[in-house]
View 1 (spheres, rainbow, N blue to C red):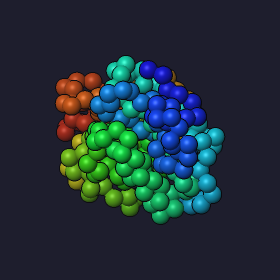
View 2: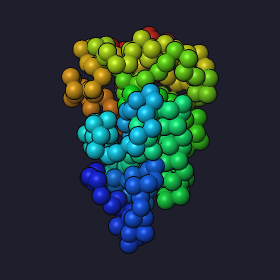
View 3: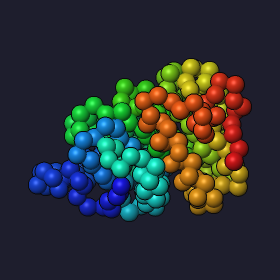
View 4: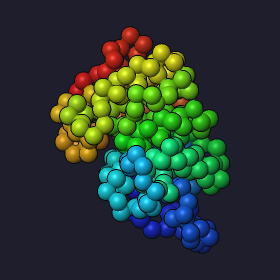
Length: 247
């Protein structure tokens, strides 16, 4: 499965360029199968407050391209829409980034009809993904080194499947905050688990193969109609599992 770089997406090419202004949209499609059955969307990081325009060449956006390519290698060769969420602004801005994710989910439905979706978000993108996880289209969330303040709500996650991965050497967002969030999500009735990556930091460069390997496995599992009975996700989400698994 090929994930396309910036430029007209598969849908734009097929429809003769009718969406030439697609950059103003919240959804950027990197791969569009002829018979879509599900979708994986990546959400990049950002800042707490920043109303400057978010651009595809910003480092936060570029960081998620290899993640999407890695995840694609573990998916069926056809049937899965691959895309990115493009925010209007670089900051969280009181939840505006999460609103952009909701816009992207709406645009996905407009293009392809109702599809189950797995969201993969890094840093602020992890927060945004978890913020909208109760949306009926969202089948699961993988949050990578997410920014999860102590007051971040979790009560809306009942029945949802989510996995958090965090490096224990992260100095930008707190791994302890992720542990606390996962525990609160479990209390709220979510199927939540966490994986702590030893020696890994916020940019996901240290132990990069581990980040990619686990993300590939987890996304493929979250997309399943029925959860696998074994593997990393089953181990992390088991009711009797510890607060986090360490790898």
